[in-house]
Image (tube, rainbow, N blue to C red; front, side, top):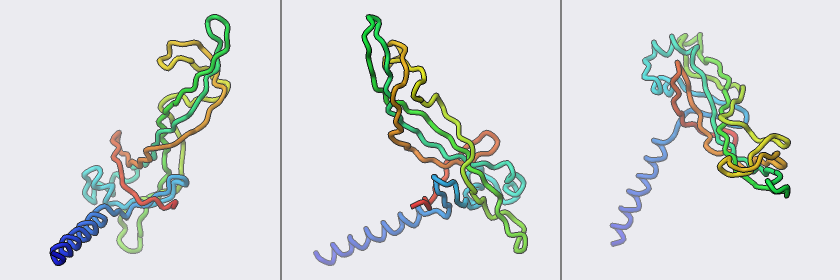
Amino acid sequence: MKKMISSIALAFVGMLAFTSVSAQTNNTFCPTSGIGFIGKGDVQTAFGWNNQKLQANASGVTFTYSTTDTYSATCTFTTGDGTPGEQTHNVDIPRHTSVNSAIDYDARVHQQIDGFNLTGLGSTTYDGTVPVVGGTCVAGPTGAGQDGTWSAVTLVSSTGGGLTVNYGGTSVSLSFVNTCL
């Protein structure tokens, strides 16, 4: 019985080791700084490119880091009968930040692209309007309430954290090791 349990335990440990090895990536990225490295193989796989296609298309490759920001925002308003009111909303706003990059290659060795150095965060766009204190709001959760003003806004969380590689209107998610930790 002990021998059977030991065999099962060894098989389980072996399975875990295989799983963790297969999930590893050479891509590195720090979401707060935008610094990292993406290997050429992941970009080639993302777009189905051979080495020649990568060399030809590399200058058009871009990267984006996307999250969903959740805000707790209080809308202050006056009701139809003239009494003051307040309602707190959780507002989810998708955020997309470009990641600056530079093509990485060693011209002395093989004069081909090795990957992409991620050199920092760039511009940010939002899918929606981020609430700001003093901005206009609607008190009802479905937008069928009184107009009011945001009186308090707090960023509660940023979730998702997806890094994508982009080319010609196509975006593909990439795995990475977070180097901020």
